[in-house]
Image (cartoon, rainbow, N blue to C red; front, side, top):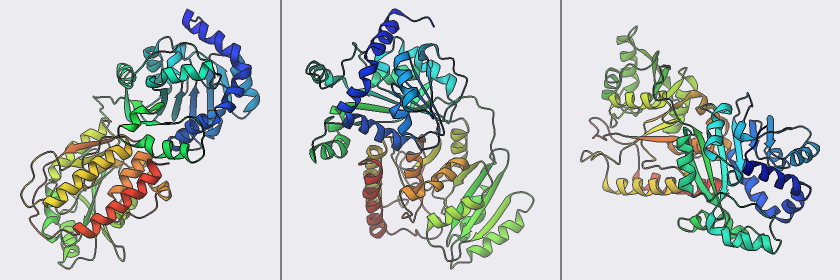
Length: 475
């Protein structure tokens, strides 16, 4: 393969130090363990993984892929990797002239982009081995650490490196955008790259995740996906899940006000032991619209809470896309068309409403609830490394295949959310799905009363947030 002068120098350098690569890795094992820990959190086992700049293959091996391919420009490093990890495939390959004909679930580029001759070309090439489901994990060091790292090299605490590209986080995001790639989420880690008992854990697990302090961390990471196609013609089937408890007068309105969506759509009501003959009204509406709308009813039985109702509906749903529509109609049914269009063209992989943009009707939400929702939004934006304004809007839309993955991974967080909103948001974040909010106008109820207790449920939500912080942020 024809290499630029810069790339040839990088290749010669890594060939030269290949025999000492594992020595330097062992010398800085704490740092490398932190990178492995991050990647294992972001990348599930048994996936198809491409590791670009794989070195001796240890990071890729730690991910336990179903199919793993490591590529590196250095023949010497690849020879070592093949001997160490015989179950994984390794190739000498320059990512700047990538010729792999395979689509991967995950692509890893750890501490690589600083050595590349043409970063934009490399990012463009990633589109050859990725589809809309692929996630790309990139790590790069913070240039605030340049002086410290240079000293560490001189006193032989760190492996010497050739002069690297100087990139800020904004530079990386700009180059990704030029290659039609977009950031799903980003974060920082490692305030202390050396292991000092108690101190390293405290600094890196807690302080490195806090606002302001996180910007001083050694490593920045990005989770990236391909940008969506703006003009997708593909249509999907849609299941609209409507939990209903004491919502008798809203049942027919939910049907007649919801637009026709996709190839076909179904409505699934889950009735939760109402006292106002809601179940009888749903049966009447099913009979009235037979042949015009596909409507079914599920008796929630002994189940309690919205989360239980939604899960029962999702389990019965047959559509490609799953939607939740609250039966109180405080979110106008007409607005679900916006949600369908956004997920159809790939603007996001979980679309949810935000009630905190447009002015609300006076009785739609109490002042204390508004304040609480805004606080939770700020906390979640920090917690998930994605912008979230309104965590508790009931209208949420996602693909059925993604919900099944969330359900499969539910044991990671536990089954503790009676509303279901946090269960979906946490699950989507763990899967590195892009969460997008659509502003909606939040209206007064015209019938019935809310089933939410401000203080009881607010305290429960706070406890769930603290628990999730331990499982997502302070890992």
